[in-house]
Length: 156
Image (tube, rainbow, N blue to C red):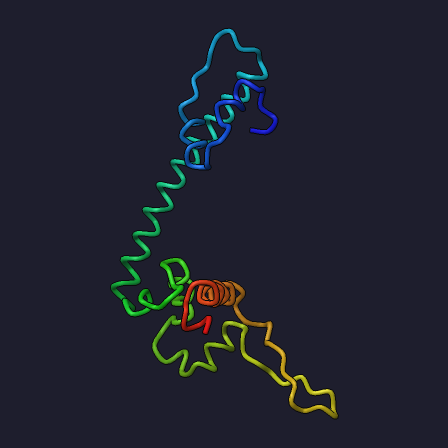
């Protein structure tokens, strides 16, 4: 948008992202435009329509994932900060019953378990184990950040 010719930029001025996408998807070509304007409009329209199609597809996939999770572990989606994608990532650790026998085992798999970081004299220091699954670690990070930001009991 920033590099677009002024007549095209004027159409988007003052709009939020959803409005800009709708405007870009509905742009029409004019025969009296120069090559730069025509090419810019073609690119903007193509990108906006592609975004719409991908966004619709992503919502369908998320709905399918949510259905699978509800059939397997409906209680997980009721937890604050856990959505369908985060729940699916966390559930990938539970490949079979008995694999994760405690919270400590899950923390070790996710790379968030504290391990001793002793220097010889000081024996009460710890660091996080960084050898766990990075995607699971990221899912836990999203849950924690959501709770810190929006959950009143966590804030308190």
